[in-house]
Amino acid sequence: MFARRRLMAGAVATAAALVLAACGGGSDSEAEGSESPAAASEASFPITVKHALGETVVPEKPERIATVQWANHEVPLALGVVPVGYAKANFGDADGDGLLSWQKAKLDELGGETPVQFDETDGIDFEAVADTQPSLILATYSGLTQEDYDTLSEIAPTIPYPNGPWETSWRDMIKLSSQAMGQETQGTELIASIEKAMTDEAAKYPQLADKKTMFLTHVDSSDLSKVSFYTDKDTRAQFFSDLGLGTPASIAEASAATEEFSQEVSAETVDTFNDVEIIVTYGDGNLLETLKKDPILSKMPAVQSGAIVLLDGTSEIGTAANPTPLSIETMLPEYVKMLADAADKVDAAQ
Image (cartoon, rainbow, N blue to C red):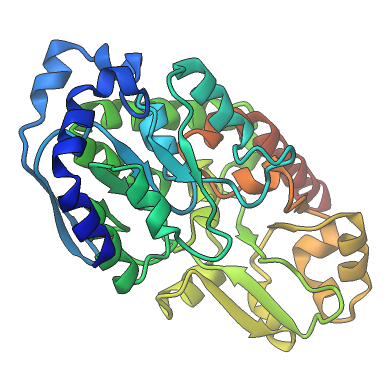
């Protein structure tokens, strides 16, 4: 393959670049150099990471980390490492700089050389990834095909998802990526910090406790004959559990019957979801009015009570409903407050 031939041809130059990495920016940030002796010595390479597409051996501590697909650069950034390249944001990016606000804030904090942005409008740009000469590629939250994985693996050791495409929780993003980076202890500490932030924020709103919540996918207001929703395999739905919300039995049963992260049912069977108290979806006030006027969907308890969280799918709050390691703490107060307001409507209707 092209990547293997090119990298082997430039092996001497690449080795020199890695030796001089501290002067070259990228993932070799000051934060990485400031690791404590105990943390730096904890990892023993080579490290083998098992995942859905097999296993990957990371032969030595990676000095140049590239990431592909959605938000995978957030883990190295959160652990104090600036990647040499990453996929630029393709939604929720209001100013078009390829970064969401929480990513930019962390990148600015760490400083160092500006990473390369990969344009994935037409899929992974393998040439651009290879040009950054990475020693590790992270793609733990992704939809990599076997072919994608094989091609990336010819460039550098690659870490895909642990279970299925686009199903990786923010915890597993951190676990797998930090393991491959040789920073497993720091990853564990990061998870604990995020969990505490979520617990503390949710505790401000006791009305949230165990409210049965579902996440509808983008609703087509011109065709309400189908109801599409995320199963408990999707990170948006898993986020509810993190915040102390409950999983409706209807969603749990539908999730158990599929390996997919989303499902679609006929609106005529919508009474299946009579146990849903809160609905989260993408849309605005016009969508709520449309649902209330629909002869079938208007019968859903959450629609009747108005306990619907409407997210602008093009905004950062809509993006952060799919939680990632850096977005959670940034957007947590706003998102939890929206959920709490919906919970108040449930209580008022009872």
